[in-house]
Image (cartoon, rainbow, N blue to C red; front, side, top):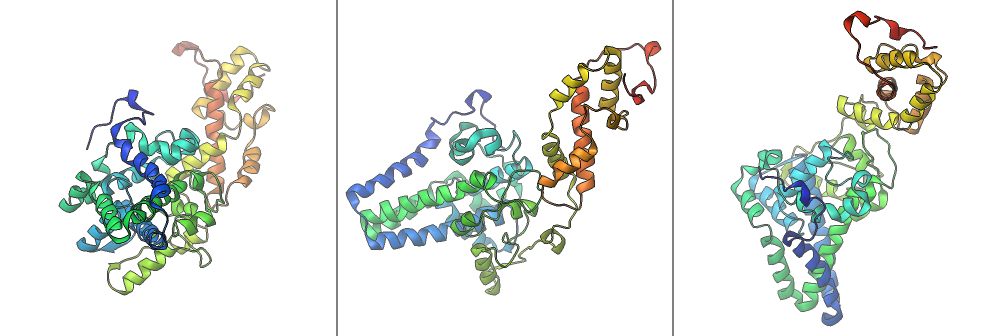
Amino acid sequence: MTSQPASADRGDIAHPAALPFLLIHLGCLGAIWSGVTWPAVILGLGLYGLRMFGITAGYHRYFSHRAFKTGRVFQFVLAFLAQSAGQKSVLWWAAHHRRHHLHSDTEHDPHSPAHGGFFGSHIGWVLDRLNDATDLVKVEDFAGYAELRWLHRYEAVPPILLAGLCLLVAGWPGLVVGFCWSTVAVYHATFCINSLAHVHGRRRYITGDDSRNNALLAVATLGEGWHNNHHAYPASARQGFHWWQLDLTYYALKALAALGVVSDLKTPPAAVVRNEHRLSGRVLRRAAEQLAARFDAEATAQALRGAHSLVALKQLGQGLRSGEALGVVGQLSDVPTRADFAAAAKAFAPTASADDLIDLAHGIFLRAVGDRLPTAPQRPSEAQPKACATVPG
């Protein structure tokens, strides 16, 4: 496991590791001198599709989520092909993506629009010095392969070799249009899943984050745009859960499975597809926190402070924090009720865990209100058992 840079480096995008990414963008301007030829355009389109498949099937569905199985040779082919897109090494990509799923749309997510802004989630996180390191512990299942460690160590080799091949095949237009243009296009189509797919689209499933399904992105990324589907069941090799959800990566994997190149393509359980599954504890907690955030705990505490005595507030605050007063809050006109939370939950996707979600969100909110009410240490002789079970007057 590599060490993380100092916290002072957070947000630092002006460092040597960011230079290749910037140079490829600048290289696109070379078309002013090289010109644009049809062979170069065709080459670029072909490399876009081929390398996008390497990213979606290789980096994402295989190395990040182990959504299917394959042999060691094709495993290397997938890694080399994906790495030729210039999105750093296979181990770096998978490690950061696993971190994303572990902390999706929280402050620990490496690329969340909710916490890093649109630019940060789209491009900034890739350039940030803090994200330049690779947590090999997160990818120890693949870090044991010598050839993948070699690719990780020499991550620039695949894109450099491909760039040279483009120059040989189609001259300078091949390098500029065929390689640079297609590389930048793959960059930003891929990055749109981190940014746009957490901002624009529809949410069929409660996933505890802001992931969304976006049909246009699904076309541009060979199926990755069904992002809410993916977050509902990350282990699936199929992200377009329904027949009308175009998922070209999955179709290609099915063809490769027919040829015996890959096997054991995982698909989502029927209950997940029908949205009848119960939420996991982690997803339920995150969704409840999202629901609780729709209500203003500070405003509620302020209203209570203006309506009740200090002694009563201390009792109520202690009860809310411990959970012992949750049953009496319905008698307090200033506090949102469970029915209010049930009404707000209608804005969320339907779920079989709706009651658990509402109860948990209501409890989280009430404890947040309790944390904002006055507290005072009490000696054991001054304690008043069960006092928090009464309605403050």
